Amino acid sequence: MQLPTMSRRLRMATLLYGMIVFFWLTPEEDSVVTVTILGVVAAFLMAWWQLLRWRGGHAVRARLVPLMLAVFGALVGILAGGATAFLMLMKNAIHGHENLDYRPELMLAILERVPVWALAGALLGLGFGLAWLALRENPRPY
Image (cartoon, rainbow, N blue to C red; front, side, top):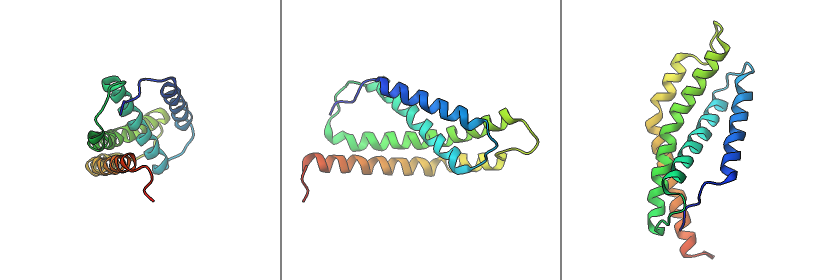
């Protein structure tokens, strides 16, 4: 399997994500689900950019794909907690009023869950990798 190289689509997806975050920062909205989704997408984009910079265009052995996706998922899980807390902090800083949109306790609770998010990302990546490997070896399972 060969990893893709940097593409225009990735740049456009990153630009679109930046515009979504820009518009999300302005209204008075304090949903934890929204900021968590934005944090996970930011983490995925950061990890994908780094992976393509590091190994883009290189061949990867098929049997290493599940391991690579598990590490990628763990990295996304680790980055997701920090990105989510950072987005919460940015929204609090931009609005700058007495009643914070996201309390400091909530931001710390998000950061406390980083190991669980890393484990979940690793297991999800491992699952995708094993499914890919199984379908690759047997394209018609039924």
